[in-house]
Image (cartoon, rainbow, N blue to C red; front, side, top):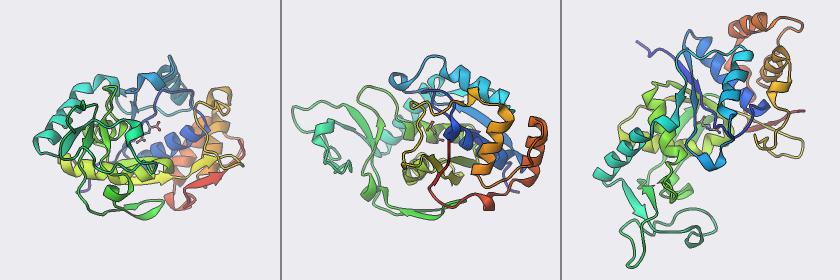
Length: 289
Ligand code: GLU
């Protein structure tokens, strides 16, 4: 029997909900709910220096106003630190993680970690971060929008950080632990995270966790090709009429909804007509904001 579908939206509370994150919310919601599945919300609040006070509450309220209600309590990653620590212990016990003494200036310009501390820290140096020891193998998966992806993280990123020098857990580790914890079967998110996925699949294997299905939506770019960031405050969704905002996100995802209907009627239409084949198969799409 196929697993019940469980999707999620996992924003970092670093600013207002903007059009780019709304697209990920709408896509993940419809992909789960149109198949009778559940949709969960996870606030990825594990990087306090980047967070904006009140942002998590505002994102939660915006989603509700837009008609997206999670099917369960909101999970806050700041409450999950013990699980991340446990995952690191599991990796250390299997010699799949190691402490690293390198600072940013020790790394090559490419950003690809050359494995300096893999076999131990040089005399006189102090451990700073923790890295995951990658096997030299190719990871392949079928992305539901972007198609077949092949990546060898050992070459494209090198052993990557799972706990930072400032003691904070890295996104790559936390996302993998929590997608499994929440039983997520479908990860729908922006294509800016496509290059992280192979690393996440490697971590899942090392931790004995299942690999969900992946679907990376094109990211919204402005005419000058820059991705919209929350910090740029590109027209926060909270200033827009909810029906209009959802209809625009649907249009970006290739779905032309009937105009002049209520928010409820729009969602009813979207749940009935959602078809992932209509989503543009590219990593980014220019869109007037
Ligand atoms: N928290 C990440 C962000 O806001 C998304 C993580 C994910 O969907 O895997 O960009």
